[in-house]
Amino acid sequence: MRAPEGWYAVHAPATAKGRAGVSLYTRREPDAVRVGFGCLEFADSGRYVEADLPGVTVASLYLPSGEVGTGRQDEKYRFMGEFLPYLKDLRARAAADGREVVVCGDWNIAHREADLKNWKANQKKAGFLPDEREWLSRVLDAEEGGYVDVVRALHPDQEGPYSWWSYRGRAFDNDSGWRIDYQIATPGLAAKAVKAYVERAATHDERWSDHAPVTAVYDL
Image (tube, rainbow, N blue to C red; front, side):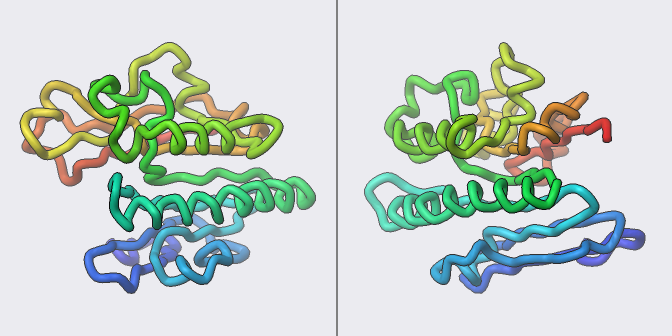
């Protein structure tokens, strides 16, 4: 899994105990790789890595999950405060080089009511707080962040598709999930997406994570 045959692997491990880090796998060797996004606090947190490929920068993100009323939520807000300016700068630099950008991974925010099953009961929970959702709206605002939610663009009227289900109860069996894993891309690349879906396991027992992969196909 760390170095599969036929793939170039880039890992950004986390120094903090209990955190797994993020990775990228590419079919060709990246032209450049960058770990972190210039913020000293999160430099070794294993939360961000990006790689330049021909015409596109691909990034893997693990945004902090947060927890209301704790330091974990403060950490999440600090991350968000530093990350949005970086995303804007990344888009501008990529555009200047004639490149597109896609940031994949666990954004830990359900953007809209359609992005989680029990939204009414979760309005005061981390991941669906008004200021978290507003921040993601800024990322997706054409005049500010300038990015596009690829799955939602292809499925504008669908509930979900959810990508995370709690292990508590029978959330997976009831499809009582959250859509918190995204592919968020610059408009030029997002316009070339022809298919996007969640690779949900067939049964609860066949799951290997509380998340499921979010796959998008681009006609390049």
